[in-house]
Amino acid sequence: MRWQTEVLISPLKDRINYKDDIIFLGSCFAAEIGAKMEQLRFKVVVNPFGVLFNPGSISSSLNRIQTCELFTQEELIKAGDIYKSFSHGSEFASISKEKFLSQNNSTLMRVSNHYKSCRWVVLTLGTSWVYRERKSGKIVSNCHKLPHSFFERATMEVEEIVDSLAPAIEANPEKRWIITVSPVRHLKEGANGNQLSKARLLLATEILVKRFPNLFYFPAYEIFMDQLRDYRFYAADMVHPSAEAVNYIWEQFCSFALEKSCDKIMKQIDEINLMKSHRPMFPESEDYKSLLEKIANLEQKLADEGL
Image (cartoon, rainbow, N blue to C red; front, side, top):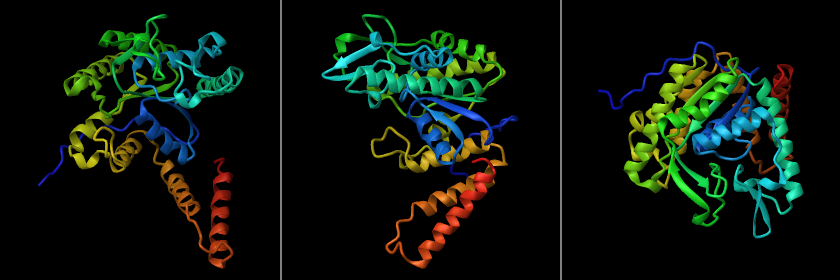
């Protein structure tokens, strides 16, 4: 007897390996998968401006990274005595505008260089709902809890989503692009509104995948909504996937996108990470010294392989 509706996934012919530079942009689901790749020492950059929920914000960030147009003082907003930007998450804020610009422009230049050499770009779309600043008409990545009167809430329709993302893909035919729709529910617009929002994203990704031969779709949304159709796979907020669900989708992503040659290295790094997480009661003991020696030997093997 089968207890699941299995989502069939055709693995990529050309896959990610440890030599490739990679960038993840998008929702917190992109952050989850990207963080796993960081822990496993892939050459990856994850959401350098913070979590990006909608295609408009992702498109703006891609354009910024491509052009490396530095952030300016005119783009900053001041909330109390804290400087922020509509292009960044709140964690990038600073009490000094000079420090904000210095840190975030340094990050931009580093990420722009990484993007030039990167072979893989992974985009995760979360919602087609956006907030536009009334003053400029631009889609913002973060409202920073400013008054609602500062913004207009609207949806990006399918063609608008396609038109926002297509230029970056078209301008970089040498890169391999993976696009996915986040299973995280955005219930502010209600259950029906969330489904309509996801439907726009899914329709747009279908058009883009058909248009560009270097763009591939990974069905994270379908795996979670159909194959893991049970509330035990949700976190306590009943919105985000549980750790078990994220791990399962990560395993599916590995089968879909990673070269088999990565398996051995990933296993070694997992072993090192597990050993490093050990907190000894007796650090002066011979057993713990042996553990440190084992870690050092494994690290040297990885270093010999350029990791």
